[in-house]
Amino acid sequence: MTQLPAAQTVQHSPSDGSRTLYGGKGTRRITVRDIALAKERGEKWPMLTAYDAMTASVFDEAGIPVLLVGDSAGNCHLGYESTVPVTLDEMTMLSAAVVRGTQRALIVGDLPFGSYQEGPVQALRSATRLVKEAGVGAVKLEGGERSHEQIRLLVESGIPVMAHIGLTPQSVNAMGYRVQGRGEEAAQQLLRDAKSVQDAGAFAVVLELVPAELAAEVTRVLHIPTVGIGAGPETDAQVLVWTDMLGLTPGRVPKFVKKYADLRAVMGDAARAYAEDVVGGTFPLEEHSVH
Ligand code: KIV
Image (cartoon, rainbow, N blue to C red; front, top):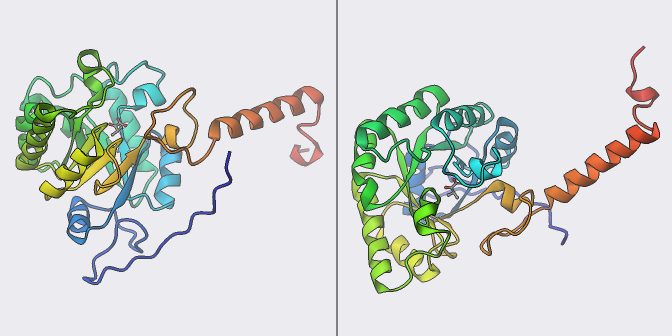
């Protein structure tokens, strides 16, 4: 494992007096208006997933401005094989924990499979639970043109929406985990999807596993920020699944992931050291005891 240099917090101060998303001094929660201003300034920003209060508090303290309570919790936290089985009750519970663990980040709660596909009214009922019961500042849902009406009603009802196009893992049974937007026809469809979610009022759009050139074009064409995952360097923001980027996910991770730590090794070594201490009688010692 290569030794990483200690991260430095950069202090940014935009000339218009507004706050930057990363490295700014403000302590109030980031809002979707801050996100829109960042696009106007051409400022790039990081997003990470989080599924529990303690991990979320670490990322919040590190200044990550947007935390996604993704339904990737299905594979990365709840032990399912995909995101498909995740329920709205589970997302509400995890989102509430992440909100409780943070003070500054904008928390985006994912609408799980089956909680919005029936139509706008079902989407509003589900999103309302995440906003009222969990306290999220925005919700995310998958789909471009096919989710236009859902996004429109949520936004009209006062719920900020992050859209998600390209590879949409909730449709894994239909599309598999394949690069999307390859070839002229698929690229045109991706552009139509991107414009459709923007027209419906989404404040940002995730582009997952699409060619870098196409993601760059979508980013140029849209006035809302694009958040890339496996979409090259030219999107406005980037998102990674935290267990992938900190090396906790077992086995192979996708090519687009950069591993910033090896938590699986660190935690395994610590657990083995503890077990050996207990078995060998070197923990607890006098200093760990009360009398
Ligand atoms: O659920 C999730 O974590 C996501 C991100 C990969 C964008 O949708």
